[in-house]
Image 1 (tube, rainbow, N blue to C red):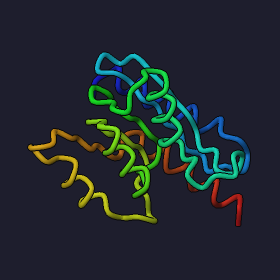
Image 2: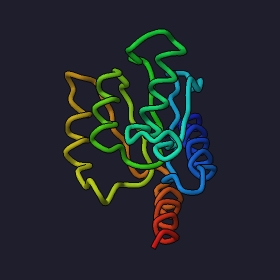
Image 3: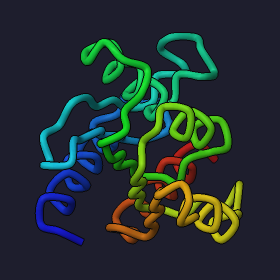
Length: 148
């Protein structure tokens, strides 16, 4: 992993750490191939009363609006938690080629299948998990512990 990618993942982690009290702490950043940050977000499902207001969806919407396009072909997405199926579909539809995430999702547990889908030579997608995994996992784990 390149230094710039580590820096961007650190920023995603800071976003997650600054999440509003009752939101699941997930941070997401979209950057171009040179590492320039185009958009970022954290979960806002409760704030917006919108079950689709995941960090990834919001960041994709912001990037597309900012760039006036529906395709983010030369961009990467960095997220602190493995994308759910809804977010994965949005990432694929947007054309983002590289996905970097921190914590693996116990809920979906399908990383190997997702990786196989992303790493297809024909499509050129790349899917990397476990980046800053300990920090990202602890953040999620502590959030849910506080809710029980």
